[in-house]
Image (spheres, one colour):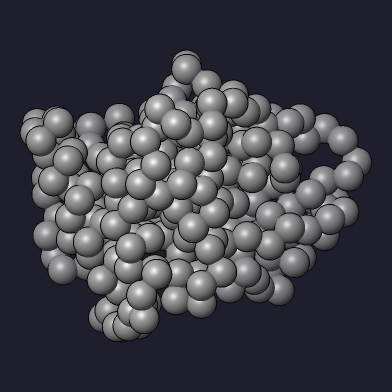
Length: 257
């Protein structure tokens, strides 16, 4: 999963260096050649390595290509934060997760433009390292174990989307006593909580399962948690392959330790 995320990131970076175009999908969200090429690289690699595990990938799903998933499947968002990609702010990521019985048990998040790689697995911890697109892993900075920090303090730092802030989000941040705010794009928000740079990430807007699986896996491996919200009430961990909702997530809040 790490190697394929890096290969997907290299494919994205090659297009990022060009004068690329963006198109609109049926739901109005943007898509570029980078989304499609990265997904093709990742999907081919996963099929070769684990042919018996089905793959739910964003661009394939948008075209109606959704396999029978069962209890164990890969979840792929080849380019999370396409708006960030188009605006060239660097905060976009490659995301690969392994889901088992509704829970993300391992995940990889790679931000090629800013050279940040995060990964984690249940029972094995979470890690961060810097690695440039196309750079051999043998030459990358050594991985550092990361850990979410305790949220039982008075100076909570929130991280939230640059492009999806809402009055409801602001009201929730005020209610839980957030003292500072860090903006970030894509699944990097989960990773900032996982490494202790922020304490909480609320999302009171639409997300899809492929947007969150890898980031949730990293955060939970780092000791954090991601909880579904009904209004302002936490109703249990965010789960996957929720047939009653399609692949839309409910609102959620991600916490540190």
